[in-house]
Length: 313
Image (tube, rainbow, N blue to C red; front, side):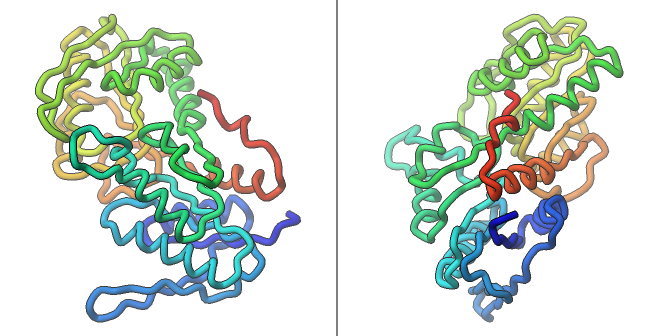
C-alpha cells in the first residue's frame, strides 16, 4: 500500500484490533498507559507516527474512561504529527442520546462527536449507529458500516441448510426500517413488535403486528442492553404461534440482568458481533467477528478504493 499506516488498540477492544491488524497482515502498534495513583491515566505511543495514517480502534463502551482514552490517543497522535487520525469505533457509545426527547437533557451523541473533532480526528469508521443521522453530527467523513453484511449470509445459510420458514421481525417500531431491509433482501415477510415504555430500559406493554404462526422468527436490532425488550418480544412471538425465535443484535451491551434473561428466555439463539467483548460466556450466544469487514474497509480507504460494495442492506 502506498500509504504508511499504523493500527493502535484501545484497552476495551484489544482482541478485535488485533484481529483487524492480522487481517491486514500487520500487528497493532505499542501503546502504554501510565496511571497515576489517583486514577488519572495518560496513553503514550511507543513508536513514531509522524506522517502516518493512524487508526485507533476502540469501542466507547462504559465506563466513560474508554471514551476519554480514545480522545487522549487522538490528541497524542495529533501532537506527534500523524498525517491522518482515524477513529475506528465499532460501537459508538452515547448513540441513544441522539435528540432532546424531553426538556433539559443533553444530546450526548452530538457531544461525543464534538469531542472527537476537537481532539483532532480526520475520519470516523463505525458500525450500526443507533440513529443514522448521527453521521451528520460530524464535520469529518464518517464511514457507517452495517452488520447486515455479516448477519445476512448467516441467516441465509440457516434458511437454506435448516430449511427454516423465516420471518424477519423488528423488536420495536424504531427498528422497522432495518428489519424491512433484511426482509426484502431475503424475500421473506416482516413482523413488528409494538412496545410502550414507562421509563428507559423498562417496557410496560407490547403487541405483535404481522403473522408469525408456524414461522421461524429472526428479530434484528442494532444493540441489546438489558435484554428486557428482546426476551419479551421473543416470548410474545411464541405465544402468537411462532415455531422458533432467534435474534441478531450487532452490539452486545448486555448490562444488568441481560445474561440471566437470555438463558431463561425462549430464544433458540442470540447472534451478536464482537464490537463489544462479552463479559462472560453464554451457551445461547453466538459471536460473529467484524474484523474482516473493518480490515477490508481500512485497506480500501488506504488504497483509495470504494467501500460501497460492503453495504448489503
